[in-house]
Amino acid sequence: MKIHEYQAKRLFNGYNIPVEQHILCCNVDESLLAYAKLKMENVMIKAQVLTGGRGKAGGVKLAKSKNDVLMSAGSIFQMKIKDFPVTKVLVSEAVDIESEFYVSFSIDRNTKSVILMLSSEGGVDIEEVARNTPDKIERFIIDPFIGIPDYLGRKFAFCLFDNMALISQMVRILQNLYRLFIEKDTSLAEINPLVLTKEGKLLAIDAKMTFDDNALYRQPDILPLAEPTIQEQKEIQAKAKGFSYVQLDGEIGCMVNGAGLAMATMDLIKLYGGNPANFLDIGGSSNPEKVIEAMKLLLQDKQVKVVLINIFGGITRCDDVASGLLKAFEQIHTNIPIIVRLAGTNEVEGRALLLNTNFLVAESMSEATHMAVKHSLEAI
Image (cartoon, rainbow, N blue to C red; front, side, top):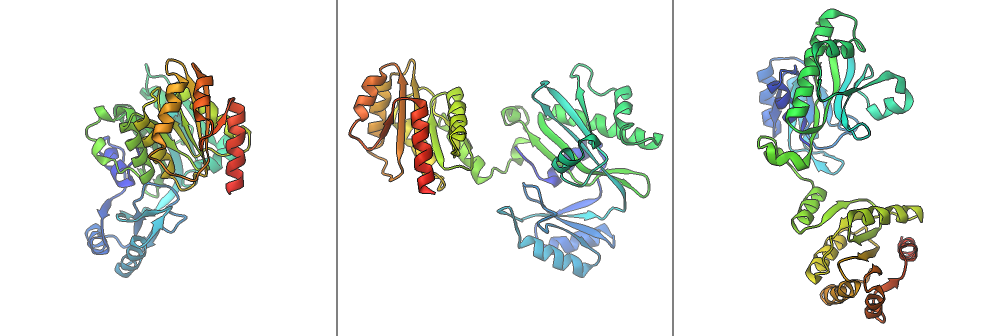
């Protein structure tokens, strides 16, 4: 789950991570009032949307007067950034910056630990830094039994600074950000940029945080901050119906029983030159109602040109699955090719039930995937 910059900064404040002065505004009039309240000549007007690339899209502007605030806020409120309409802006103190840095905590799945990333190249996409100048990124695995005591905090801080006053500030920031990361079940806590001001202070002038969806039940103060996108709403609806669903950007809709088989299906689609439209694990049931709901979910995606149903019958019998598919498609009417692969218990009987129907039946996973890719390419 993602949250907005202003929400992340509220959490930063609660953990004594220094941020610039800022006021959240929901319209142009509030932006003008915020400018007057801050009593600063220069402010930043920053769009609050749950996506990156705000600056490149024109969603971050410097305002040097009341008229600038009026014009800048007015234009930003009319924007869409990557299809996200701007409904809130942050009117923030324009900080006099000496230099910029990057700091983040995230999960490293290889080491099953929290990883700290530091860079002197703050303010730009960290992916570009990693690609072009990887030597400018420092990475440290954090031992969960040790955390970040003072001696480790100083070790990390010396990667960026040699001034003891700045080292002291940086140690506190790292310790507090790590504590926030752990206590709030965060999967990413990022400051980009962390800036050094002309006055010698470190400030987090941007904040990005995402949270582990599976841990939200124990974060009652975080859960109300959720603003699911249309795609995330579909995933939530699917979960409520007993599916595991993730939307992707391809043309082949996948309906599979079992997460491992679903992953293997997507891998094979890519191997044969196609693109999966989703990950969808419907579980072991052959209930026609479940198939109907799964198909409705797939067909909501207008990118889907073909559906591949890949079923392995273990405890579930393939002839029961075939009967369920026939009953389900008495209620579903579509011109999209439906390819079915049944394997396992009573697979021969299952395939026999689907003969002379609108289903395209395959005997092997390879054959089914080839058919799906062929139909998807013909439909493009």
